[in-house]
Length: 327
Image (tube, rainbow, N blue to C red; front, side, top):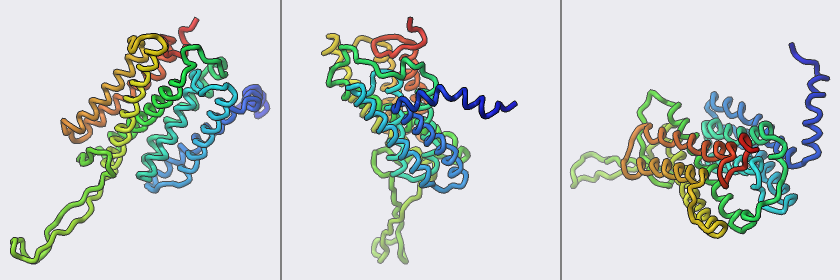
């Protein structure tokens, strides 16, 4: 039985009043609505095989809403907006949508939007509807976090997570599309992925003849394009993760007198680094072909979720925001 509109409105009234009184939360809801609208549009564009500029516009507007939200929270709290899990998730959603726009700039395909949009939507949905109110409110920083290293370390780590998450989602798409066709990995650098085939033209193949070499472009399949984008995105994310881990070690030495304490977050960040290092090793040194490297990148997605969400919500260690087992 469908509830009457008056009952639905009365149930939503407290939530709407809170959102209207808190512009930060309202901007988050606006970004959520834009991404929620963009998601089915992206899958519809995927079914037609044509890239939609409307999807990119909606994602860009959501990114602007996230930007305004973070700047406003920064102005309200007086510190970089990363003091709780809500702010952290909003920052991750901002970084994911920005990464998606940059990847789509390299290859405007509906596959990219269909694969990457759910990540930004999931982050802001979890932050807006699953977190308790006390984790959505701005809170003062503890003394150890009142450092210039906060912006450097946390922002780089979060942007690296976004790049690795989007790259891993593209790898999952590689595993799904065109499964009946063989996948030849011809891109092993951060270049554009363009290749050209040389063909000898002329009346004869003898060296003395007037034959000449003609170069023609090699077209990538959809899976090969996605794999190339995934590889390049993960490479950037891996470099940023390396910088973030090193900066975190320097900051930890200044704050607690120890470069590395085997905190659960530090341990899982190291595991994450090793997984993606293995992925890059399979591409650069081992020369794996087919979809096996994409399986490694897909496993990295699970590791990042555990590292970022799992450790935080369990309330364990120095890096945790706490929730489930917090007394």
